[in-house]
Length: 74
Image 1: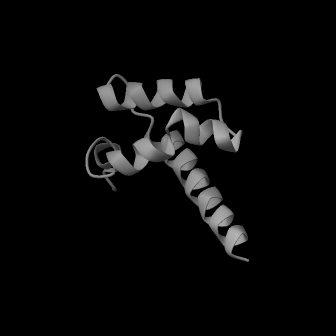
Image 2: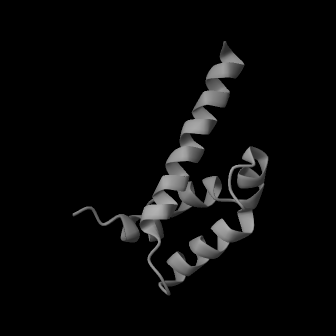
């Protein structure tokens, strides 16, 4: 299995922090920044393991940021 929970707490943390920043989430308007922040902080502290939902949010944010760049270039 993929150690996604550990990766999000380790080598992918900076990337995830940027995408899960309240400003980034509020700009898109798809997710409640406070709710996502609570999930992220619980995951980082080890109180809970929310890797699946966080990964899904990260993929949506990554996809949306790619679409915005593509539209801006078109």
